[in-house]
Image (cartoon, rainbow, N blue to C red; front, side):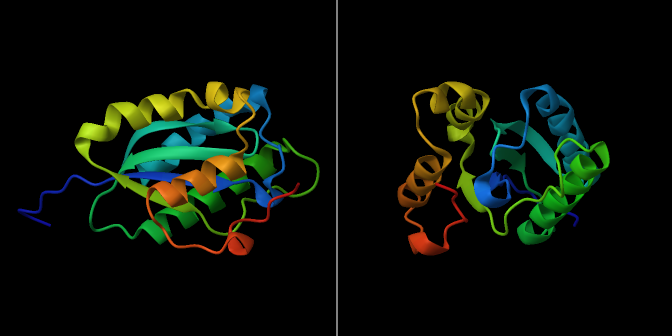
Length: 154
């Protein structure tokens, strides 16, 4: 689109199906590189990526012509296929249905990049992904019913 200028930053968060801890540390770097390729091939800009064994955070610069739902669908489908082809887990790997998407202004980027890069430290203090995710929903004042927020395995 000629003469279209935008600055849209979105943090996308999605979880392993059942919120199981299936993303092993020895595979994280390769998985994140693969997801980086998916982002690049979809002509979006990856700003930061990290997560834990049960979820992933992706901060991307979103172009306005791309539907967020289509983008996340592609991230999840392509990365699931990659993990399954690598046979990193027993059985079939999949991401849970649904995701979180949170927008940021340019002045907030340093803070959210630092947060994403330091996932291990945030979760080291026993903050669960469920607690983290519900806190994001509350912070961004997104209405939700807890029973519909992911399938959390207790």
